[in-house]
Length: 638
Image (cartoon, rainbow, N blue to C red; front, top):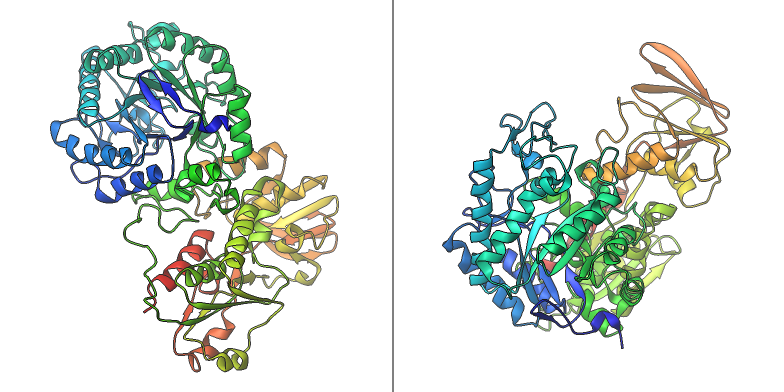
């Protein structure tokens, strides 16, 4: 019997398994209540077999800061929250509503309004802004409002509430010496710094009664210089347990080390589990643990070995709402893998709702399903077997169309291979495996080593042709460029680096290439035209932090604001600040961007009735754009 699927309980709340959807903030209506799309999004995860769903933070007041997510502060918010809870209950899932006193110094609204915090510390997003310390009266006001919010959650039918007290947010700012320099009863020694949180717990208990489960999510260790160390975190766990709570939800990191809190492709699996296990050994209440636990075997083992009582999945639940039911049925090969790209987080912090690179239906469960073919048999040709081409082929096959996929190389995957082969990016390889399996399982007629020509396409008389031929590396017009090679040659292992490597280009690909090459090379140097690496990389802050940390840990040299003028087999010459300089090397790798493989587009437009170009063949961009464009091209087909 799988331990993951044991029936358990937290306090009075009975759960059908040990699988938890972690809290991730969601957008709402203009009044802060849950929107219809948000309700459906949660319902889908309940439908997928998840035992416990923890909502994202619901703020209890907007008196001190603008609303960052959904709100639970008045009676009128109950209706939509109740709809969410009831629909999850229909599928046997329980719902824990997370309530938050606020973001404090993490507030990201504008560079003009100083946010509130425990003390006069710097605002995170706008370091020149000094925060306004909460007065004791304002703290008590928030405590009262938080208690009332808990009563509203209970009124809405919630099975539990979770106090948002982690990750460098407001309560954690009070917990932490680096942000809390108060000299009153809310500052100083640990219990005083935790006083605000303990008063919140007492207010919740007063409002929900003795039997209603209260969870607290907290951060025992920040993993950043000057932040909390585990010894203090263990003391916090004991203090919280004494406060009559029913479970502890363990987090690691803060915004200064955001990649430690919200996992990226660069983190190892189970990267928080050592801290979770330490807390589990310290307290007797149930413990919830997270940190890239998407591998069912590792999740099962963590629970069996007693490292954690519950497995919390965050972004994996966006990628595949049915993770739990697929694991239970043994259908693990059909789990859509999270690739740690954090496009979901980037979308949220750009003012949008969630997007998932590998799941076009995330947050659009009712808006984007594939329509039925109604017996109409269409023929579809997909040119290119990268993520865009495979996405289109899978969608077309699901609609019941006859699908052919032509790939000019000997394997499917396209540029995903170069992206995923570095040792720290194997999550991407899981996407190739998954998509290839779906293509074959759905009966797509795959033809490898097949290069598309206008004549061959025309002869097939296809109803729809999708050009998903990807992109090729751009080789800049620099003297001696013929002695260098594109990054893909090294990422794919076609070429081996020497001992002194220069990577020209400090974007995402250049930085990842440099980090990978340092595993065998003695010296690696990045030369970048702009003043800093990753300057125009369109990715989320936590991915940026993780990759910069990797560059620093591997002691990779960076020369910014430099224009390469000449390449020879043993030297790269460049101009910087009006001076001609050079760096010795035995390997030169080019990572200067990509160009679309769209040469067939103009030819096919004259001979194909219905042609769509998707992914990098349209313009080199991201996995998300390739997967989504492939999917939607088929979805809107008439």
